[in-house]
Image 1: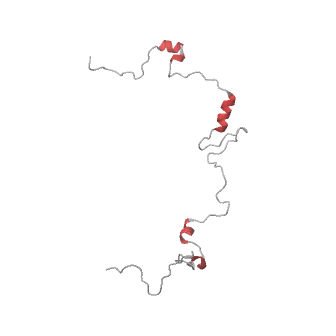
Image 2: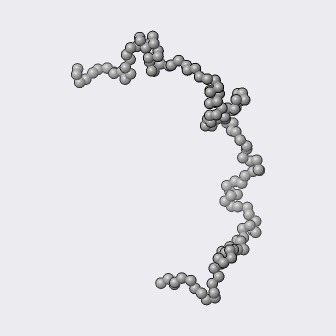
Image 3: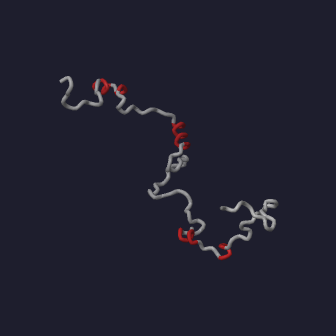
Length: 127
């Protein structure tokens, strides 16, 4: 009997059950009575708090019930249809837009141009 015990052991020790029933303030697990708060403070918290994924309460009354798939904001196609992936990959550019720029590979800043004298070779030949 000293090393083995039959039956389950209560994880929550229920002591002073009648005392806690008569005085609920002593029981930490029991629901506590409501706290009285200032309405001005509660209204301030409601209007200043930002709830994630919910519209902010501005104190202008209750909003109408919105469908669950409702989203706030402007529609993304306000500037016309956006190009699809195939158009972005293939491109629909004119031949003039696809041609390389005239100054490609040339420096446009004065004094920074790599103009070498005729016959000048840079670097060493590899062996």
